[in-house]
Length: 385
Ligand code: ATP
Ligand code: MG
Image 1 (spheres, rainbow, N blue to C red):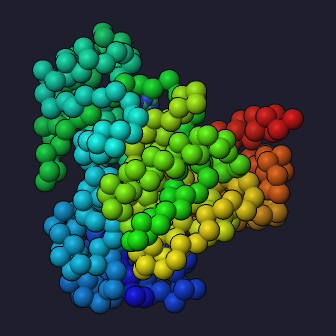
Image 2 (spheres, rainbow, N blue to C red):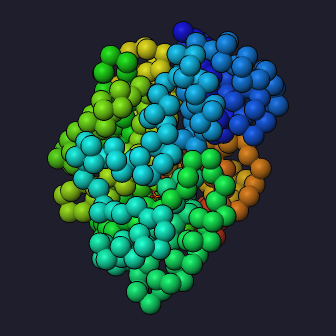
């Protein structure tokens, strides 16, 4: 098994090719816009169409959950798709995701499904304000969400949502999931991996910070054992239920000592990019190992590591590379506001050293492009003293 086809040819496929090459894995990716199979690191090099791609591959996987269902069906029929199309579809539909969480008794925010005005009014009755409304399909980076804080805004929010539903052209019927706003202490995620034989390995919980709804910083450092155990138990329950193969991420809200699941991602995840420098085996390699049925690599944290997303910028000062242990990972993408263009990983021998290096990084980077980094580094330094 050494020929892998990834559905989706973005940065995650690119990083899988980078991780798979030392294992002699031949990694190709389907560009879903052109429907051509390409080399992730050289997407101008076209290797054929989907049919040829499926035929030539030993295993097929996905780098995003919004893959067209007819493509998933074709791949599943080949018997080569990992994880299953069911798992991928669940990650792409918040209604199915909620049903999965309920079936596994995984704690999550109180919610209500909304298709029309009657449901909308019932959701407000059933949940208390503030409420967050999320599109069931196609949401990412905080897009497709409405927040209702006061009853006076209900009509306006509903009108906007109703217009959105009417204009929606999805093949599966679009809908809305209303969710109780959770007054969380922080957001964390767990990236884990499961092999065909049921072996599971999880990385340490990662603390996540968002700027304008987009992940900006992930921090991996030694974690509270009780929380780690809680998250690991949820991972095991969900991944066993799905008979999952590969890397899956679970985003949580931490409220006191309890973790509530926000959402799952049936793929390698942005909050796991720190593993490239901070873990024994990175998430991209572990995903490939799992789908190729190879022994999983250790997920142990080598040293405290943070990942800083580069959003909407295609250059950073060269001085970044002068920070010990800072590495830059560009995605070879055309610059666009709000677009994830690359990331910087920074490690330290201890948390104070990491925090100081992050402060140094924040001093070098443009404040407008990284508005929250300096504040994050400052408070992280303060926490260490
Ligand atoms: P991403 O693609 O970045 O993971 P998304 O568009 O899929 O995001 P969510 O993760 O569901 O959407 O929500 C984005 C952010 O909105 C969350 O990280 C969190 O900060 C906030 N949020 C979402 N749901 C809730 C909730 N129920 N209570 C409080 N905050 C919430
Ligand atoms: Mg999210």
